[in-house]
Image 1: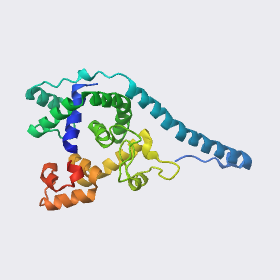
Image 2: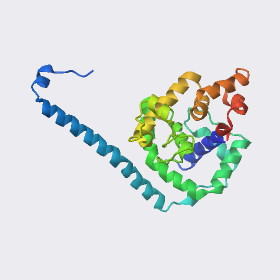
Image 3: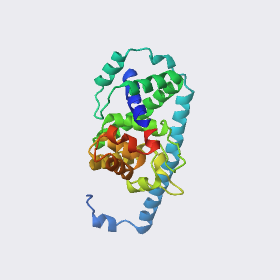
Length: 253
């Protein structure tokens, strides 16, 4: 379940802690051809940035994926008291409960593929400082960084069969609504900075609707309409665990 995986990733993070003024006389004195040249230069510079930035991130990710990771840094043989204490010690805003189901998912993932987790940790070392800076700027909880891990495994080129793309798996219409350029030539959903800014605007809007981060995260995945339907079917209850049985399967699983 994505909710359980979100909690698990929070635990792994604990384990591996780490109005312009226009001067009209100046403008009038500039020859028209100079203005045209300046505009063209700006367009070319923006185009070069759009081409070079993805190449830079691709090279960085290639280094991360080929660098030897220390998979034995994740300690799996720990008692419940340690799991619970470390979860409770996290400075979280999103509620992080600990129960038998959460424990089973923690053990399942850290024992099943430690090398893949180590690779994710290396990607997190690269991307999380970017996320943290932007989340802080928007006043959002730091632990939302882990939502990108769940959505894309921190792959900026990830695409879903439904059309979502990028680190935050943003749909084209959502990206455009929250300020991204998405067309046949440019797709800013694959830009780590721009897509994170759009995801923050989207998550902030969802939180303003539901007033609860667990519901906002669910709505990010399945849409606010489906969360509202689940709330209605749960008799108007507005906590995640009450509406959980009524959420779409892909959000629950």
